Length: 492
Image 1 (tube, helix red, strand yellow):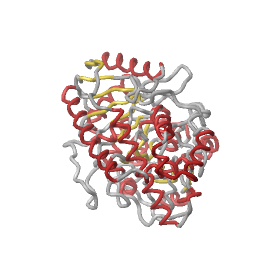
Image 2 (image 1 turned 135 degrees about the horizontal axis):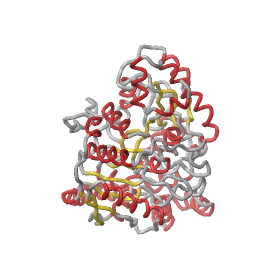
Image 3 (image 1 turned 180 degrees about the horizontal axis):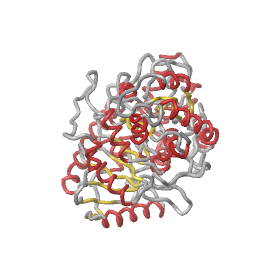
Image 4 (image 1 turned 90 degrees about the vertical axis):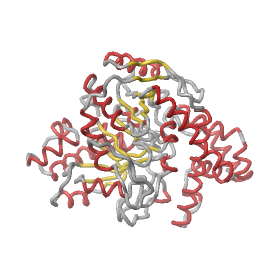
């Protein structure tokens, strides 16, 4: 198979070709590897090749709905037995994992041929993918710009045509942000639907979940059918729909009542392009027969942002301490920003943390009341178009101040300085809309409906109520049919 033919098909389509005998798994794999070798030097999307493992697997008798389809894992929380999960960190670059993650096992059982792992910021802590350990990943639509994060390596690989789908996970927008940056479809499942084990019972109290980035809606639906469901070692028995997600994606969504908002929920600035992306989507939705009006959720999203960061910083402290115990490495193995976040987390009292976590219920209750009136919430996915590589890096003055505070004044003082608030605002200014779905555990998606005048993708986000994955997929398929995007390809 030639690359041009390979690129025409999504993962479901490639699996059908393998099942019919028109093409062999080994052939698909070699096309995918050749494409990776061609474009990865410019993108830095693939950071851990697994070519030999994949070639041996492609020779075997594969079964499952995606038998023979090339696939990439995200190098974070998607462990492959015997190989390191680097998590974008120098501290973990050489530590092999003892077992497959459950979600990886399910992908392998579905017949996927994993041939590598993709780049991520250190511990997935940023909405860009520029780790010191591996260097920056670049956006195939314009390599001067970021593909987003933290699943930026996977998004760049899919957008560049290396694979039709790749693994991602989302703890604050990390599937939806890179989907929006790279012109892809990205669905974040709701809390507890997809397993996180065996390394985690649930990631970030269930705020973080595994999923995929895809070019087609049906690929995301079929992938969710593969990975969703009960893990006997997990904390939940999730509620599943009566029909497969792939079947739900084929159904018309009916006339929906959709609320939209464009203002930043934390009061920061929003670019005209992000507003235009939502206004464009509103007109498209109205043309499809949906009722769309502007309304507020009632959630105190500024407080939600603080509660999100309280959890994030404390989790970073726990992660750094765990890695140091497991590997014996020193603080110098971690990026400065990671050390700052961890220091703030250590300085957070247990009572403050528990009070913050308890407020998650308040936010969820408010959003549930909103969903009694509206089927979906529509917002920008990003407040600004994809940033240039390096644009969102910590300024030199802030690095200097951070080093001084870490070395001299201690974590307690660091947590009380304006520096932390400025770091928080700078980190969330670009992506203030996505944390709502993580904290409340609701499913959400980014749909690639808009490109800027400069030729960069800029997706829009939809947030559903509990169990709304099927509704999101149904609407996404309707939008995809009305305004197809899969044939739009970057010139790389």
